[in-house]
Image 1 (cartoon, rainbow, N blue to C red):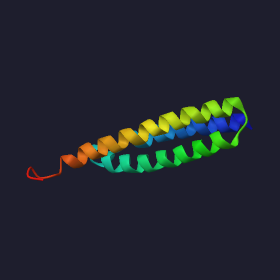
Image 2 (image 1 turned 90 degrees about the vertical axis):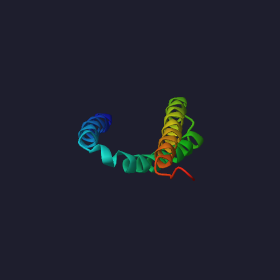
Image 3 (image 1 turned 135 degrees about the vertical axis):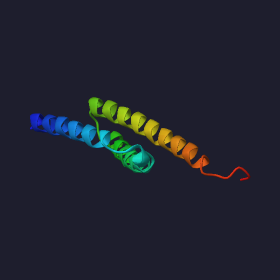
Length: 92
């Protein structure tokens, strides 16, 4: 069963890299907003796993997911805020 999970992960990684690599630069900012939403869901899921497990390895994996998802959410909001500043008029 674990082999099937690894195969699905590898295939999804390659497919994701191909799809993201073919997106034009004008669509990167809207996709960043979607990525922030997905990272928020990942963050909530990692918190639930961390609270509901007794296995030490699962707690470490959940901690890593919490740290990485938090960095992605905060970074995404900073990039989005900086991008929105470019659209403000000089007097605002």
